[in-house]
Image (cartoon, rainbow, N blue to C red):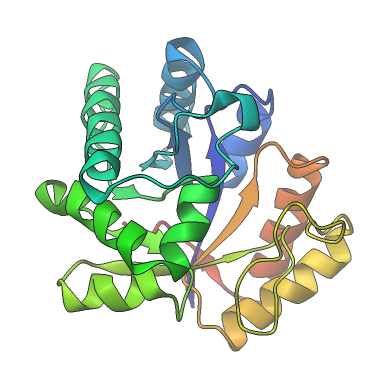
Length: 232
């Protein structure tokens, strides 16, 4: 079975050089929630060196909270915010000889789009002109609206985040939101692939022990006979 292994990079966490050789897709920050032109350019160059597919990782303009504080923006403003990030990021990618192959929203924008039709709609409006696949949680509002609009949707699971019974992520404000044990992460990945039918698995680049997590997940996937390959 083909499985993609992705990570959120270009955010200035200091793990990019170690993470990039281990993954198949990189969700690179567009610079609004974290990172800067230098970290973004460096991540793009690393992706090119290691033949890793590049995706845009837009988020709220909220560097103080790393883009993880929920906001309420009118649909037109949200569309403008995301579209602007995609245009800038596409240009940065072009300068390194690369193309943007998909979009994965970041942090609070990601979580709100999974359950809120207005946020999901604004996000879909923003990417409509780019004809790019969109990454998100299976069974979400975003998945339903994306399919209705004819937008390719890639179901994603997280190795380092815990889930609620309804399939939503446990908020980071709760003490048990993160998985710290690589063994537990591997068990969750098995559930995500077998039961949730995800096509791509994420480990956050800023999670403590991120590199060890990626190595553990990668080793598990290969041991189980999966082929690691980007979906885009």
